[in-house]
Length: 149
Image (cartoon, rainbow, N blue to C red; front, side, top):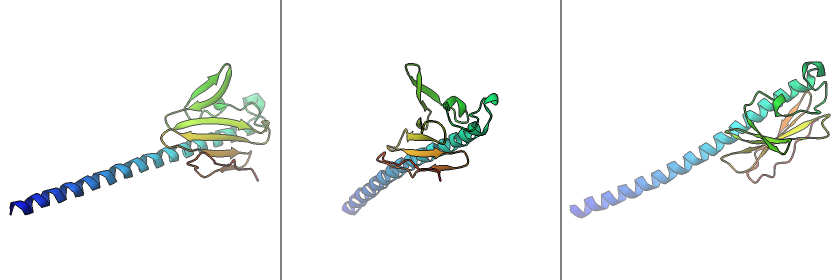
């Protein structure tokens, strides 16, 4: 009877150990997925703010129909700390990720790249006056920049 009980204790220990490892892996995957979703939400908010900026007249602090001069200060819908290099603003960072803006000369569209903090990779959103297109999440940071129609 003692051997059966010892085997049962060993079997239960192995099963609990396997269940613990599976639970830790599942939790890690869920945390990465939640971080990617948070970056998507931030990019969507930034896109809406960028569209609001471009349709606002210059006299009211907007772009007057173009994206020229747009920065993270103009997209105040997402709280983030701006990163600078010298006197130039190079990006924006918050608890979800790091964001950078690239413009096509600043007139017809602007692209914002988001890099999640917990998951490797990136997401890119291209913002036009009346349209925004978001790339799929790319774990290897090879997301291509979507274009406006």
